[in-house]
Amino acid sequence: MNRKNVTLGTVLMAVGLLSSHVVVAQSTDGRRENRARPSIDQVFKDLDANEDGKLSTKEVKGPLKRDFAKIDANEDGYLSREELEKAPRPERNGPPQGE
Image (cartoon, rainbow, N blue to C red):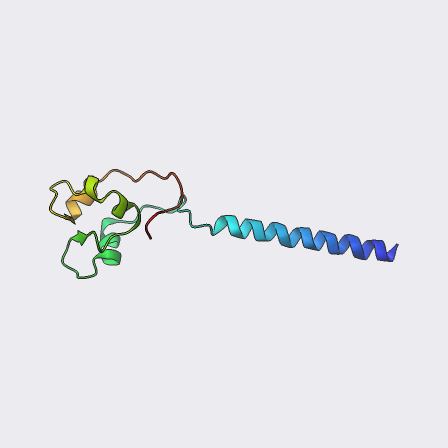
C-alpha cells in the first residue's frame, strides 16, 4: 500500500507540473490581446529613434509597419502624431508580425 501511495503521489506531481507548464506557456505566447493600446506619446517615446517628431518605416514595427501605407495619409513616408490619432485599430488575427 505504501508503494502505491508513492506511485500515485509521483503521478499527481507530474500532472501538476505539466499543467502549470501549459498555463505558463499560454500566458507568454506573445499575444497582446489583454494589453491596452499605448498612447501616442508612448509610441513616439518608444519608436522615434532620431527624435524628429515623426516615424519612418525604419523606426516602426508590428502593426504600424504592416499598416504603414494605410496610416500615412499624406504619403510623405512618415507617420505624424495626427496620422496616428486618426489611424484605425489594427486587426488582431494572430501574434504580432514584424517585430
